[in-house]
Image (tube, rainbow, N blue to C red; front, side, top):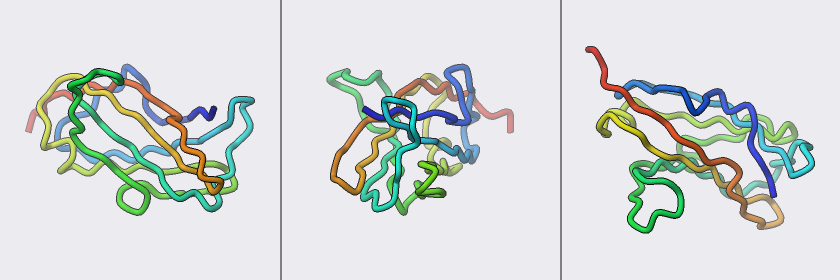
Length: 124
C-alpha cells in the first residue's frame, strides 16, 4: 500500500470557484519510503460529488498523467497536479471528494490519497 504526503492542501483548504491550483504530491510506500515513480504508466487525480464508495458518485473532473498530472521528480516520488480555472469554475460551491491513483512500472495500481475539498463562490 502506498500513501501520499505533502499534498499542499488539507481537509480545511477552501478552493475558490474559477481559480487555478498546483499541488505537489509525494508518494511513499507503507513503510514511509519514497516510491520510485520511474516508469509509472498512470496517475489520476479525480474529483467527485459524493464520498468514495457512494454508488451514485459522479466524476466532476479528472486529471491524468500528461494531462494535468506530471511526474516532477520520479526518484523523489513527486507528482504535480494542476487544477485549471475551467475545472473548478464549472462546479457549484460546496463539498467535493478527491482521490489520487498511481500505476507504477510493475503494473501495480494503488489509491494513494483520498480526501475532501470545499469550493467557495468567487467574489468577482
